[in-house]
Amino acid sequence: MFLSGLFGSDTAEKVLLYMESYGSGYPRGIATVFETPVSQIQRQLERFEREGMFVSRLIGKTREYQWNPRYLFLDELHALLKKALTSLPEEYLQKYFRARTRPRRRGKPLP
Image (cartoon, rainbow, N blue to C red; front, side, top):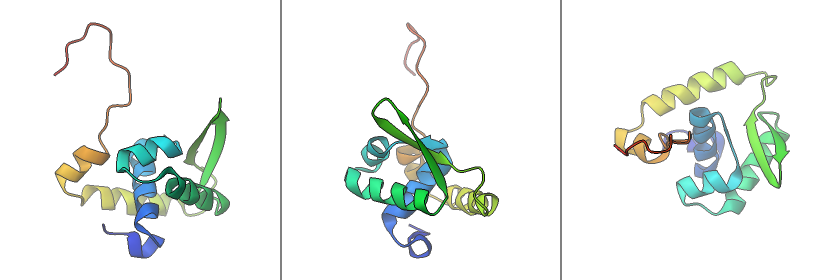
């Protein structure tokens, strides 16, 4: 992809693009989307939390990560990631970054 050299690895880039697209996430969910081992995703999320980019909280037994609003370069990072997302091919966007996250109303027909 585009930013793996800047962020150090392909996994780091995927995690950041996922978080830019969805706003928050948990390791198994991100790993499922990208078909990547959960341990690689966890390592990146923990690294980004140590650096202050993300904050996390426990919801039951699941650790959810989201952007740290106090991160110094948050606006610049968002701008860079939005530009990267807009330059991705459409089939890549559909596959990884446009999954439905809200529940569907009962009885509503599928498109």
